[in-house]
Length: 90
Image (cartoon, rainbow, N blue to C red; front, side, top):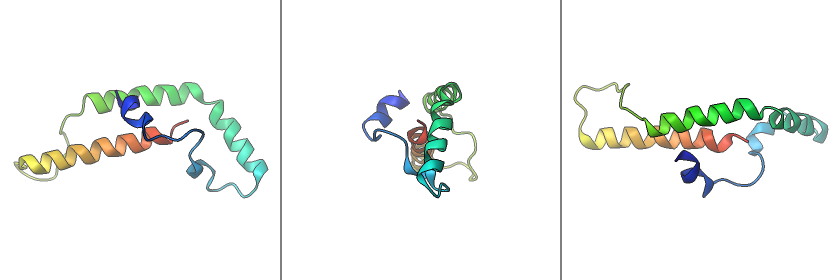
């Protein structure tokens, strides 16, 4: 479900933010190698994010008796954050 929503927006390859601390091409290649070899962890994390996206319940809100529009904004922001994290994963 989350993958369907993100795939339209995702680009091919790795997000450049993975390489922000890499100073040269060799360091970038090393980072890429580590990321590619971590597929099991990333796959599990994707499943966790998908589950969180599907089963979103309004749990942690800092206001009493929120109006419908406040709950909608909160939920949409939460889902957008999950999509952004999902999009970062290789």
